[in-house]
Amino acid sequence: MNWVRKWQSEVADAECAMRLWPTCWYGTVADPGSTCGQQYELRKIAVKLKDRVVRSIARRYSVVILRSELAALGSPAQLTRVLSNLVKNKRLVRVGLGIYAKTRLNKFTGEAATAATFEEIAAEAFRKLDIDVSHGQLARDYNAGKTTQVPMLATVDTGRRRISRRISLGSRTVTYERSSKRMPKEPQP
Image (cartoon, rainbow, N blue to C red; front, side, top):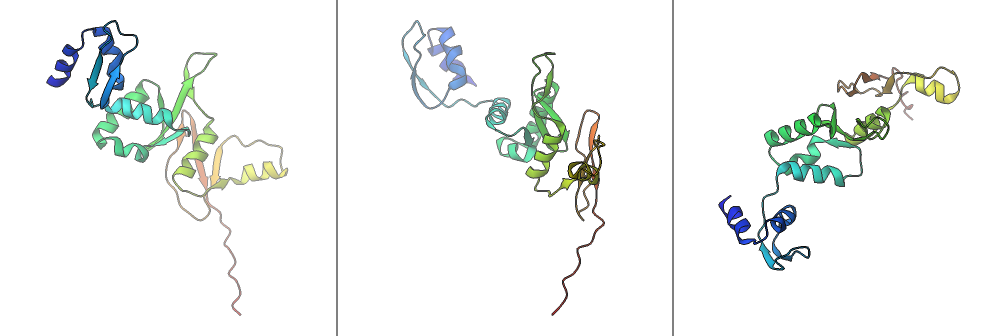
């Protein structure tokens, strides 16, 4: 990091260097708010992995972030440290193995809360993992008007597929049920 110190020493105004630091790329830049009014030749400065991960997460539209989506940004050990720090700082919530959800500040309590409901997070996680699921039997009965009892558990039907992945958020956990119905074979002509 000697060249970084050398680059910083070339900048007459220390305040100017601090403003330029996050946007250091190849090229030349003139800082309009600088008192020195000079142009600085910028080198590509290694951006910390945490900054790259935070920027990547912020640019994503989806609420659910898979670890595999961030794997190209750094080594597995580094990524583990960065993600665990983000969870500790409540910028992300761990939903399952390799599954994280974005958080945002609740304007009423000031606490960090997930950016979507548990059901939306679970549905998006299954969609991203390419697992076909449908509503559980109780939810299907409620939606069809067969019962007025609102299902309290997040239950999904996995068809004939066996899934053991645990998806949970706080005290809520997705439970799985398998369809026992077999598809009838078509008669042979």
